Length: 94
Image (cartoon, rainbow, N blue to C red; front, top):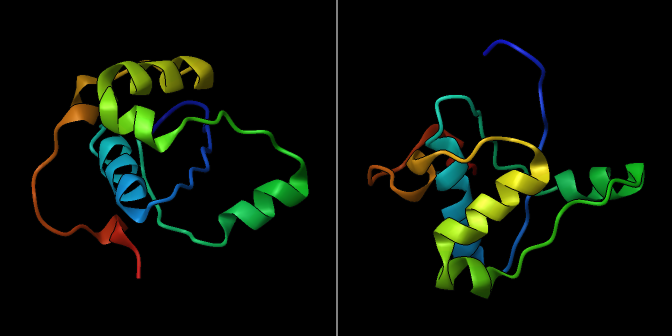
């Protein structure tokens, strides 16, 4: 990938929504995803304040919520974030 790098840390509960977000972002052509369960501690220690979305809102209205998240992060929304092939991926983590 060319251009500037934007690192986004996401965490959620329940786990099912974090898998959904991992799949949504991982399905973009311009994104690499990594399942890193300890990243929150590092981000918090550095004082970063990430955007916060309620998981129930994402589940109830995925497209508008993902559009809003992209807007807050300053990245273009991709329709590919809404659909992805079934099956496991390397980005699934441990």
